[in-house]
Length: 299
Image 1 (tube, one colour):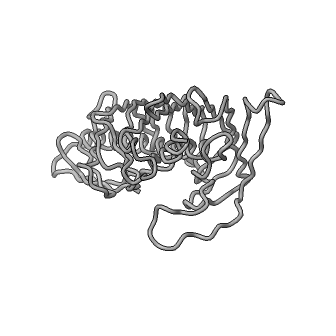
Image 2 (cartoon, helix red, strand yellow):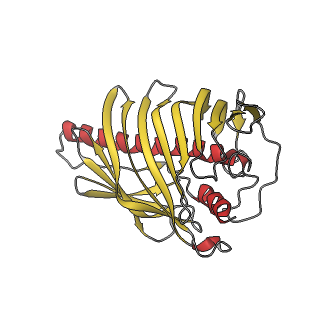
Image 3 (cartoon, one colour):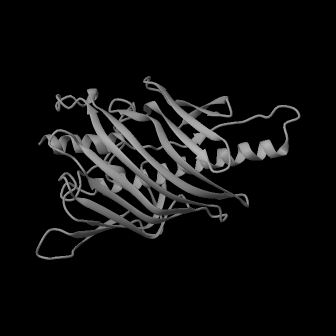
């Protein structure tokens, strides 16, 4: 089925696992106030990226449970790391359990699915997860109108506590595969007490390759949305909003975002522009603050 095939390809290719590293320098005589302003803007960019990483991982796990509720095989349910060169990783037993509770039995839906990572579970991506992801599915997620709403029970990723609500809705039509994802009152808390409060809405749309379902290599996806948050880091607090300047473009045949621009506006401070390039498949992007551009590496 075309919808099923494209939904699978969509979920596999849209992960935004982007940890941003960038170095800054200051001119001689630059005031400590200016340096502080730059540092706070940097903190908001890093916070927005951290939110994308953690909650996109939730999306992949929600969609990846199996083909009865999602499309199966994404996130922690991926059997092997197939997007990297070299031999496939051996298939090993998972270190998590999956439980199903049918809330209107004997009907199949709604169904509550609990992914329990116990006291520590290291995934193929190297992340250590613990606690529970709990998702209620209104219907099979390849069906337009279906909703998956996720909450968290003492859930951690690499010792960062994850809270809030994650919501996915299939808004596809007969001619286009589209998902809307929302992070509602998200919160990420680090062991040292630093935290991020985050809300985000995003629409993911299949834009190229629709006519060739047998050839996923020509597929690409448009990602648009906006968000807002507050970060506390090192005793200082900053708030920001983010929005697309140009839609972000993700190709099936490349693990990186290849094009598009994101604006991250710190309240009462300078704006950062994140530019993913001109379409080349690489792990480089550029951030510009106050007219100064710095190349960053995506991981």
